[in-house]
Image (tube, rainbow, N blue to C red; front, side, top):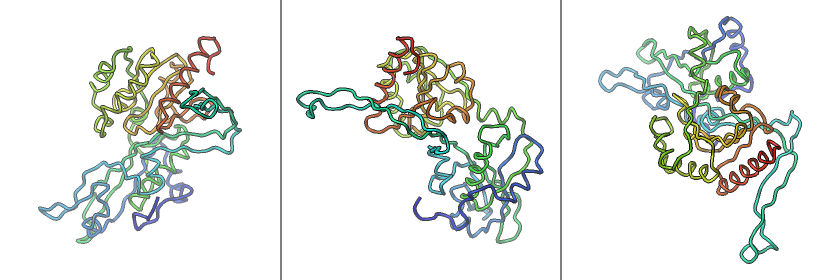
Length: 340
């Protein structure tokens, strides 16, 4: 991560005991990750909290906010994972067979004799993949305690549900994102409803039939999303659509509402491909039944291990690897064997 960015303690290896005590007092299913801090106005003036939108009003010198903000990736390990995602190796689980497809020159000379496909299968550790979570921190000015200090509440969104997948891990993750960026962390009971929470994690999908690249791009961009503000977004979307079109998908899929950055294609009921265009770091190939996929939450969608999906990172040859994988999977289904 390089040089430490902030002067306070970075993160915790385990949930702090004081947080456990407060958590035990909370009866509700929903938990708010938040903490209150007495902030030195001089630190606001120096820009220490600028990444969270804290600033000084030039007219009257008061502390103002411009949140919520997604923390920068260089704030710490957990902030990096929050923005870029996390591939978690699981050596505690049994190894699984995984196939790799690559191109090999014939007789050692591709220019003269061409190439052929080669498939290698070996046992690998299972991985648990977490997409970028996109947690945001919103500061709220509570009061001006002294001439030199202001009381600020820092709250993380979204809230956590005790019943969500990997609650303990997500709790540690959320606490550390808050700690890395503010120097304080804690939990509070939430007055929000369960439906409010589910609205931040439950994926809904729009379905679009196959068409030209222009048709698909127009359909996807008809509902603006956070992804559409990214540099080279139109080119990115066209490249993905072109790669999907070559393999003749049954339909295109797009996340609805606040999940409008999700884009992909359905090739069979149990062969669905998608990626989050806001981050654009990998393509996911899922092998569950579409009816199951469409009902899963954002947090649950990719928490299974390698046996349930493949992740194609966008290296230079990703389109080649993607194309060969989908062709093999479709051929296996035509032979009535299901997943290859």
